[in-house]
Image 1: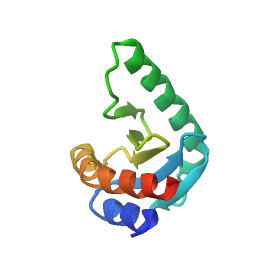
Image 2 (image 1 turned 60 degrees about the vertical axis):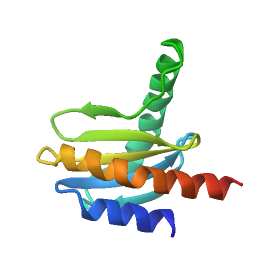
Image 3 (image 1 turned 90 degrees about the vertical axis):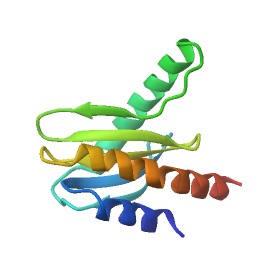
Length: 123
């Protein structure tokens, strides 16, 4: 199964979703599923990765803890980000009325599949 198909499946289960993206740790968008065409997910993706790298650094400095996910929320959207393997992040963008609990559940459900697919592609 391709990454886009997994992202589409994940997106279908999240109410209030704006977009979901798979981004390389170099900031390049690998795949993007957009439900709100006005939301600039691709423009934000590089900053999502920059923040993930910062949080990974903080985890290492904090005794080698692993980063599960991070959440950034503002008045227009929220983004839930998790590292998929070592070289990619999955970013789930929610609108103000998005279902964060459901987004977390779907991210936990699909992240291992996406990470496995990305690790297999890197070999």
